[in-house]
Amino acid sequence: MKKFFVLFICACFLNTGLAQKADSSLHFSVGVSLKKFAGFYSMGGLCAEASSARLDKGQLFLGLNITSSSLGSAFFNNGIPVIVSEVYARRVLLKQRRVKPFVMLNLGYAKAFPGSDKYNSLTTSALLVSPEAGVACGISSHTSAQGGMGYHITSGNGLKGPGFIYPVCFQLRLLYSFKE
Image (cartoon, rainbow, N blue to C red):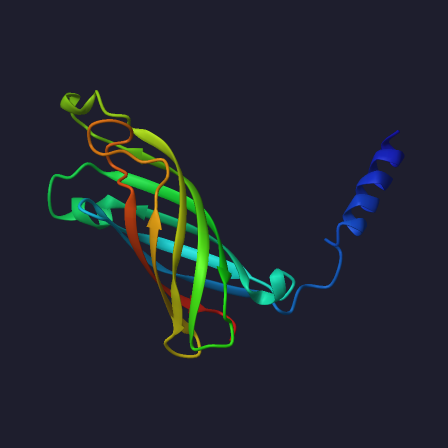
């Protein structure tokens, strides 16, 4: 039985392509992310994204944003600390141009840490779904900037729902690429 199980795992490993040669077209970038909710918090954090020629001919990027109001609005004042973690899929529409428009879908989770009993009536966590559109531009051969505007479908207004996630947001990412 053990031999059959090991043989089955090896067959699955070879069949899924995990044992194939590494993808030489892999593109990986890391950087900083700045996010501003219209009329509310600003946040700062880190981001990373990856792409490959195998993913929609290099036009699809998969990424991760982790931002916090502690690196934004709550840095110099007594704002409620909020941490937002999002995974995203970004599709570049016109890859050949210098300024590349894109559409993006963010899925994530946000958690607020009020630290005071007077905020007990507010929801302190939320699942996030937000479409976004924007432009990306290369600054140098290894550096790029992305700016976009998004709309949080699952948001609040300060009175109901998650009071720390407002619908309209603006995002700026500065990325360093490890491969040209």
